[in-house]
Length: 246
Ligand SMILES: C[S@@+](CC[C@H](N)C(=O)[O-])C[C@H]1O[C@@H](n2cnc3c(N)ncnc32)[C@H](O)[C@@H]1O
Image (tube, rainbow, N blue to C red):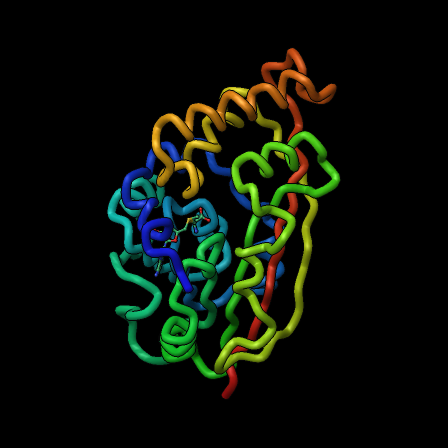
């Protein structure tokens, strides 16, 4: 069941999200679209952090996103892209109008079955659905410790990629790619990034500040980050590729 308060938390930010959230490696877009296509829809496109990788991979790129604040940033960055304000459960596109649908960091917010029905409706027969999520690298102990503060339940269950259950109605699962990469990040940006995470956006100010102080203490103690203004953050991007049943 999607927590609507968390799902709508992105209505309040845009600029900060775009400035502080990580992007995606080219390999993630290549995994979904190994060849150029005619039309691709990026659903839950946010500020366009994944959409921008699609520009070179399709003649027509459409970004759909329910938060106007997020979409305004995308429109400023990528003015040539078609945009619509809408949710995944009611997609304002014609039947069989796109070759591929991509969903970066957002599928777990969708009402799964109606969203799958809508995605299948707008996809051409045999079209591709690519779901992807950035993750912390579990081998990075200091980043993992920060995640434990932000999300105390982390490790018990992965609530995001769990959404990419291998059974999606109307689709057949084709393959999964796990891409390891490294992001160069400043300490200031690492701390500010946490403030763009839904659990921080919906927390009260005192909880937010307490968690940021605790995360700062971890950075002060870990050999990889202690005393440094910038450091390397190991990242993983998980990509799940499905094909629409004909
Ligand atoms: C974590 S952000 C990811 C944004 C962008 N795809 C990226 O990777 O940076 C999740 C996005 O999903 C959007 N979202 C939430 N519920 C949605 C729904 N039911 N349909 C479509 N998008 C939704 C939010 O507004 C937000 O922009």
